[in-house]
Image (cartoon, rainbow, N blue to C red; front, top):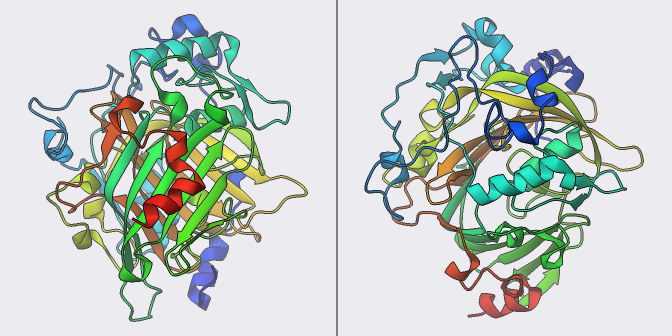
Amino acid sequence: MVGYVGDDMKMKLELMKVGATAIALVAAMSGSWAAGPEDLGKSLTPSGAEMSGNSDGTIPAWTGAEPPRAGWSYGKNRKTYWPHSDDKPLFIIDASNVDKYADHLTVGEIALLKTKKGYTMPVYPTHRDCGIPDFVAKNTVLNAQGRGKIGADGWSLEDAALPGIPFPFPKTGIEAIWNWLTKYQGVGNEEGRAVSYLSAPPGSGRDGLAYVSNDVFFYPNAQKGTFSPKDNGGVEIAGHYNALEPASQLGFASNQTYYYNKDNESYAYFPGQRRVRRQPSYGYDAPIIGFENQYPVDDQQVFYGNPDRYNWKLVGKKELYVSYNNFLAWDSTGDYKQDLGPDYVKPSGRRYELHRVWVLEATVKDGVRHSAPKRTVYLDEDSWMTVAGEDYDAKGNLWRVHEASPTPAYELGACVAGTYVFNDLISGRYVWDQIWSGQGTKDTRFFTDRSQDPRLSLDWFSPENLRAISER
């Protein structure tokens, strides 16, 4: 985790030493707090967001999920068929004008703009493209009528109509984070050639590391219908990772299963041993294998994992410039390597829009530990997806700055977790995850029904099957 930190960086980090409560916020907007089930689809979107735009006209009204240009089908370039692919930046935020826009920037964004030489944020027109299918909207109404419940332990999801948003009018931070963790992203997906990139240590003279994998994910309670967290073995998501590159990792594979009310389970196949091993501690802040201790398991997509080690506070809502609609990372004709900078992803690989977001503060509970005892998570109001975040170290220093980009998946009628970046201000390195740019026809495939692929079965994600498919 810790790399060399010079005196200049120490000074910068000291200047950035802030508690999560230092975030400037507007009060939570009263319309969402006072809302009821009857408001969904009227003054509020089916997901619980404000239907109207803002008073300045810089955030438009929500009009529903926007379809692609005519002629799109799976395998065709998603970016080309996005109706707004010809957008140009409205303006660029950099170190010279950061103070002008500070009210609409996260703590982490301000830190990057002020400490990373040449760092800029291209701001594009706002497009509220995220929707949900009708059957997800119907379940969300059931949840708004009282079905969504947090368990007696204060963190687990006891009940909800799934697939649906458990708490469209959240009153607590734990309710809001479950809206993200249960977000509808289809019943499954396959990432044929997903790239994850880790930059080199500053001054090392090394090249960065690119990892390529074939990944399969299954959301058993996202099938059309109405399910509860108790159905399908209480499984929230099952995932399979199969390493393709570099050669040193070829043959390594792993399965992870996440639950609504208990610790995740993880198994890994090591080709040199031809064995499957259980990984009982592969969660929370444990480092992801292969990333040189730079990438904690629950830092994926800003935060993904069991929320039980934190007290979650719902602070309010704010209009912020956040990563959104980043089809740049989904451009199969592009080349992500052109967007790699030594210290950060170049602005040619990033896109920002002004959106209303919920702000959550997470503080580690007494009696448990986490390498990031405080963190901030920002959730998009339209999709309930993560868009930004900050991790703080044990001394209260700003440590990792996150951004994630909700991106429409045309075949789902909903947005999915797109590309994701975090910058480590202590080590000076960054991770860029879920890149599909330049991967040719290996587009991500999203499934709406488990009958579309035989792998969409809990048996396929078992440790027994992991060995069978890894030794073929």
